[in-house]
Figure 1: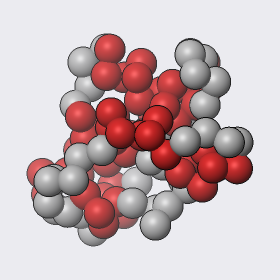
Figure 2: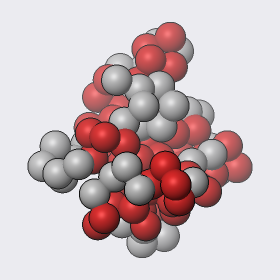
Figure 3: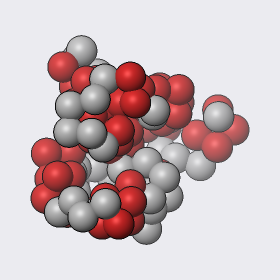
Length: 94
């Protein structure tokens, strides 16, 4: 994980590694019933950074999966961080 994180700006690397370890935590804490958002909400409630929560919410084509499940794109709005430089490099669903 750390070797991939080196592709990101230095200030995002720690959050990327944290998100990599925790990205599926939502399976164990269902709320909406969609694990990327459930996990991001749980992590936010525990005080994790907005960047970690964003990465968990958007991991592994989560937007595509949400569409297949009939969920609206607006479920991601609470975790969008459009002004974080370099965060687009961490996106794997685009």
